[in-house]
Amino acid sequence: MAGLDGVESLTSRFDVSRETLSRLSIYAELVRKWQKSQNLVAPSTLPVLWERHIADSFQVHALRLEVSDWLDIGSGAGFPGLVTAIALADRPGARVRLVESNSGKAAFLRTVARETGAPAEVICERIEKAIPRIVSAPPQAISARALASLAALLDLVEPLTALNVPCVFHKGQDFASELREATLSWDIDLIQHSSKVNSEGVLVDISRAVRRPKLSQIGA
Image (cartoon, rainbow, N blue to C red):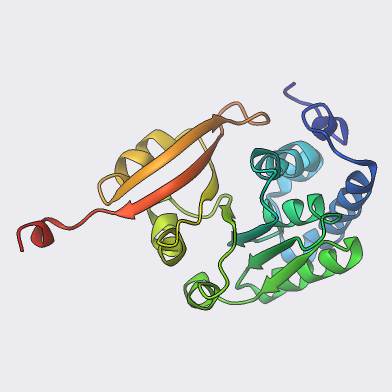
């Protein structure tokens, strides 16, 4: 299915309601409108926005349909967190918290949430500052896309994985090396899913991540 664009790139892979498609279309138009001022996505990917960003992001929701309370870190233009929020717009009590420190992008996220009616809460601050407060009301799951290495992501969300909050991370062709690096410091239970959109991509579904004790601690 490589090369599909527009709505077909999404509907050929996932069960998407007409209402969700309408909201996603509003989102896509707002991305194009705000692109010049905020550089939301790589310019080369704008012509294939539905394939490269929207369909790719929709995989997170599709992977964990049972989850209605998400935390998306480093949200940027809202991929995947805002796509997830739009997918959950008709589910009572749904919530997606989007952590984005860039004020311009945070303003964009709030605009899309307002225009689409998505249950998104935008937190405009650094992830390291936001998460300690979120611990008191933890999400059901965490997502991130194109943000950091696996080890760095686990460092960021450790206060929540300590509470057994699962994670779904988009990763690319270098995931095997990232995993080797991460397992030096982390004991991880995960399932690796091949991307339905990007032949080189994977979705990493982490059910457990516990920091390994340092050698100095083992001998103490």
